[in-house]
Image (cartoon, rainbow, N blue to C red; front, side):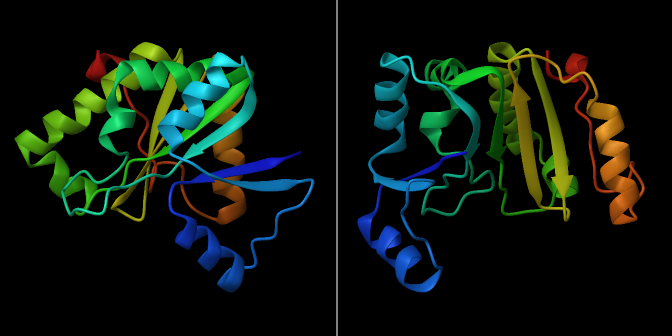
Length: 177
């Protein structure tokens, strides 16, 4: 396995190396580049990844913080899809500055959130939303639906000692279509 991290700010990369133990090796590399340019370049080269973790948030405060605007477009989401192998998975941090229950009560922001989710649903065959710790929302998408998703969720929940209904929100495809 090889882990490639892409970070636009060289100072952040240096901080990660100095204070968080990030070491580049044959198993891990750090690329200093704009992620949008990086995915366009790699998609043009027809490169594939088994997993992509998208955790890019703007510096400005807003209710729906992540992902950045560039990863709310069908064009760039389609590039992410192209980069995934047949069994690849995309995980997107959909961070908000409020709890999910408060977000749902704000019609304007909820409409924006739904618009973003719908784009991912159109590009990927399978997507699910997971709400963790009330305000951390993660979107998981795959090229095809995992065969044993429900079983894995139950296994993980049992091992962690949490009920499958608490802390997890399964997105209803009809809700976002």
